[in-house]
Image 1 (cartoon, rainbow over the protein chains, first blue to last red):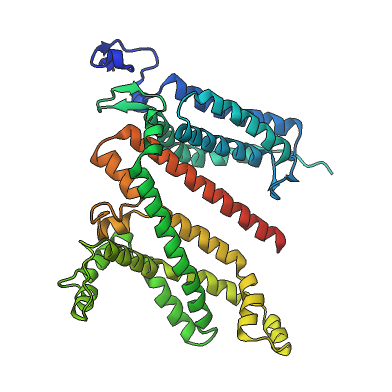
Image 2 (image 1 turned 90 degrees about the horizontal axis):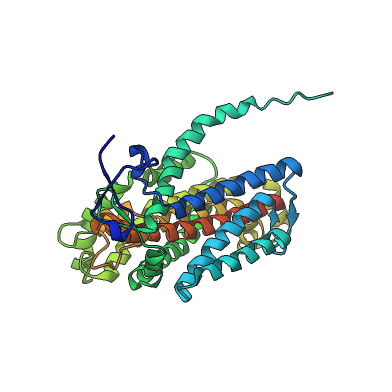
Length: 117
Length: 288
């Protein structure tokens, strides 16, 4: 319980760190960082938003989009997220820096997907 | 009449939810966490940002493994799907031959994967294995432990032996569900054997074939055990498919960060292909 944990940045490697409030032994092996935690919180928020949307406008608004696929809201969220993953990967492979530009492209992509696919 | 709304059934989903959380969600989250960090073990982690993703995406090693993986999957699909349909077409439709064929066909599917690898390893050994020895004694210079071409040949042959039955069984089920009336109509019109196949049997098998291609794609794309036991990825790296390369990186070199990044990229490719096939299947479903 009271063993010392170690640092999470290069500057602090090797130095002992006081056990923080969130350093449960149960979770420390998962190596959480605030960035990845924020990402998963975003995903959870997306799903929650979809649930609320479904409550407000039930049925998932199915339609045949420009790809010729029968999609519902959930499908469109999935296409947006998976597509965003690939956009980010291609951006990293081809350009490499200023990743936030890829994120902006993804937001545009998601809007197009939700509007037309 | 008013229906009472009772959502208590959702509580029955909790066990599955917990199970999936522990065997899928939590490990996957951990992989995501690892993919952005460097570690030397002992729970010491340091933030690296997108470095591993960049490194993997630009590495020749990953490109080579991905290329090998797609080549392997493409080749086995190209062999197994037509071969499976052909075998299913020649299988008897009634009589004692049906159970005999079905049981013979299912046998390779029942053998554990590492046993398949070990069997083929011994079978193909150039000095004592039946296949290897025979090939060498009739004049082929065959040695799957040293020649990349032979290693590929053996791996593909093994996969065809192991999994063509699955395509056969699915196609056979598809063929059996065709009503005799279609064949009678074809006969009245004087359709040739090819026309019957092209315009009756193949469209009727579309659903099961999509499923067969999806299953075979996924299984071969994630193949690990059989080539690991047969060739261990060798000679050199010539049969190191994606999963073999991934395990080498994660456990052999203990490069957890790059390995995590690579598994996420791998996962996205698998997810994309699954999604495409799922939509194709749903389209087939909607048409029929």
